[in-house]
Amino acid sequence: TMVSLQIRASEKTYLERCEDCLGIFFDPSELEALLDASVSHVHRINLDRLKLLAQRQDSSHDHIVKYVKCPVCEELMNRRCYGPRSAVVVDTCKNHGVWLDGGELRKLLNWTKAGGELYRTKREDDEQRTRESRKRRLPPQGLSSVSWNDQHDDSPIIDMASVGRAVGLLLRWLI
Image (cartoon, rainbow, N blue to C red; front, side):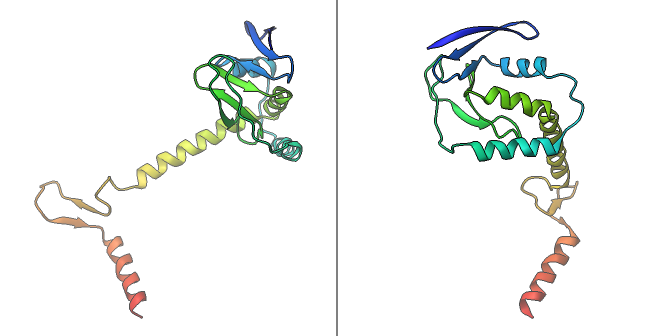
């Protein structure tokens, strides 16, 4: 049985809570809005605190995987880690929202207070820079280390570094 709760974040929000298990269902983007409104003035990442929170979660977790049905469409929801080092696995319905088991909201608030959201943003930025860096270093698709010159005649331009590596490997194999 679900009960509607009214909370005041940046605007009036209604959440649905299960009376039996105390789980809470958030419509899309409501959880993020609540975390943003509840935890302000976080300007640094406390890695020691994030590590401690994750260790506590790991040691207290019962390791029983339970799939939950979406309260709206009744399809099984997908499970995903909410954020790096949050150690909270949330159930998500791509169309209707996020389910938190009882006690998980408190854990996410503590994670946010420790700079978890800043940590997530920093990691995503670092991963994006790494992907962009790899793209710049990779040769064009299908050409590997051989590229064709601008006149489009049939004479390839050979990357001499690749030739040197190949010769070195061949010599090591022969010796």
